[in-house]
Length: 161
Image 1: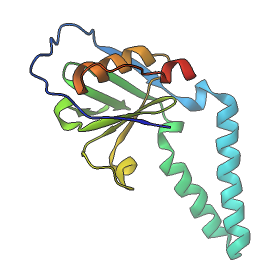
Image 2 (image 1 turned 180 degrees about the vertical axis):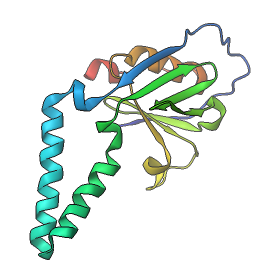
Image 3 (image 1 turned 90 degrees about the horizontal axis):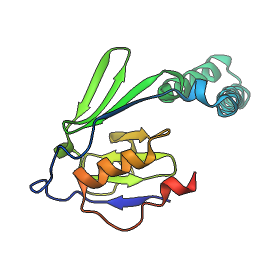
Image 4 (image 1 turned 45 degrees about the vertical axis):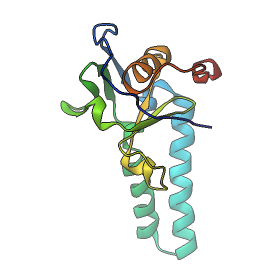
């Protein structure tokens, strides 16, 4: 289950407190068992679509659509957190999101969902950035608390892994 947080004012924050961090996330290489399960699931969906509609092309399209939608699983992505905001780097291209553009965040079991708007909608995950913390749970949550909200008791997500 997620824990929804709303950002606090940035006026009294000392930006020199936290050192910038950077890490690489590549589930394809780091989690071979999950990789096998994901690939088997994609193949199963492609096969099910092929059998259900009796069209091998639609089965391939369904599998290809899943591959494209799960691109962060198959491609190494480098994430960074600093006083400037959140960075996502893929093959030299950088997406930088300043802290002021993030309205709220949700703590999940293996990362945080950064949401650019305040209201909770069905489409929120599609307009948001999921930030897997890999081995940096405490540091990521420290940045979230520091830049996005006042300290609150209990970010137990790190202990759950």
